[in-house]
Length: 87
Image (cartoon, rainbow, N blue to C red):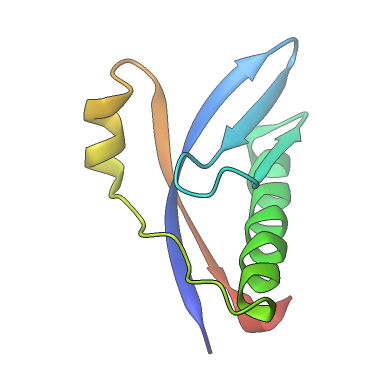
């Protein structure tokens, strides 16, 4: 099992939720609800990181939720965990 955890910015725009990963720029997701956005974000994160692994790239260093809260003051920051072996 290859479990990873990355912090994501959670924003509500135009009636939907968006999750973006400042440490994994190619991964982002949207959803009508927070739960939908989170599930989509797990999939996007897993696909992006598995693609990096397949191409022998190093995974980006993951900053903590606290680090991102300081960097992006005022924005909601959540932790997203995913088991890469499930995708």
